[in-house]
Length: 103
Image 1 (cartoon, rainbow, N blue to C red):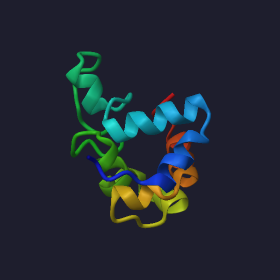
Image 2 (tube, rainbow, N blue to C red):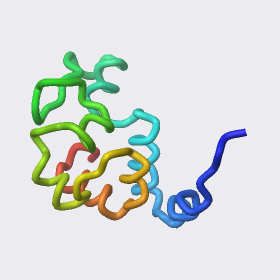
Image 3 (tube, rainbow, N blue to C red):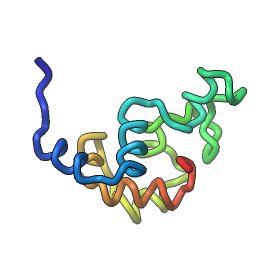
């Protein structure tokens, strides 16, 4: 049985459908980021559109990408892990809205 985070679950259930879709897509990797889009044949390159150095995945963009450092620091601070980011859903959604990559 998986270890469920009841606090995160409650926060997710309070989101509207559009925001929940974005968060679930980021958690699962099934979103409009280049890595996933290249797997399903929508785009040719999986590379990050901001840095062009690594595959564009939620983990890369939220934790590593040098091309979005300024936006990441504004909305997320300096997160070290994905669970740390998930504890700040408002900041995470603000970050992705600022980038405009999930529209």
